[in-house]
Length: 334
Image 1 (tube, rainbow, N blue to C red):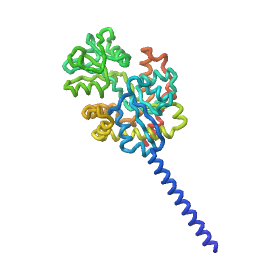
Image 2 (image 1 turned 180 degrees about the horizontal axis):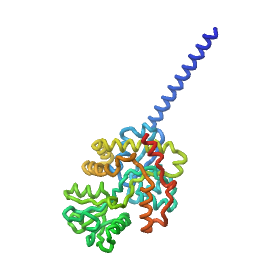
Image 3 (image 1 turned 120 degrees about the vertical axis):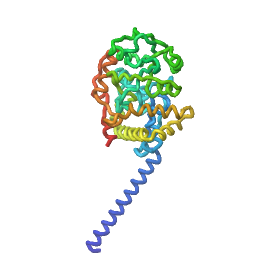
Image 4 (image 1 turned 90 degrees about the vertical axis):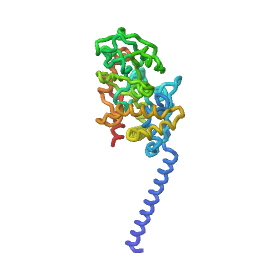
């Protein structure tokens, strides 16, 4: 065999080997996708509803699968361990919680890291019947109000900024039943912008919604978090999940009807009108148009931490280094 023919044969064999390797890689990738890839569990902070529509869309539209993930969304129900306890114990890989609970539990020793904030504007609100003419926190003086312990620090800060104190209001029982509010027995009700005010409107009542962040009390909500260990051991899994969730939320925001249908398919108890209204009320709080979805800043953590410290819910204002990271949100936006 001449030298030229030997070289040609060697080249041909190398090309065949490369093609075979490529085919094997493709087969393995296809098989991995078919098997669902890395199995992870996400612990929600509540029962299935369109508050988490972006996650459901990521699953239904194949965004998780495209990232090589097999994801289970687990509801939270009364009596369950908190999402933070679930993640810390290893029973869940990812969790969703409030910014307040995240800060409190981290101070207590939970080794967790915030990787995104879905709600850029806190959905915590105080709302009134429009006919009551209560339109500003200074109008709260002498009124009846219903709120839960989780609302108290923000309420006190809101009143303080208006020159009032909690002693100038009459506290009423708080619960899921809005009948006392509809009757006018309770003038002011605390809740979340995409939940109780939506219920009131669907029941035929005009309401005025007061956002604390319109009065300088800012914060995030629906914090996506993981254990420090997962960030250390499997940063690629964290990155792929955040990217799929961001993609799911962008799709849900642009396709509200489809996202609502995907959500309602999860439970027969979910009503389409409520879930659609909830999602529409959530979108302005999620997408600011200024920064990537899920973005966080030092100011967005510093202010709430100082507020909790002021109301003795935190022993001290925590150092922010290591408490949150924007690394995964940044990569998700590429």
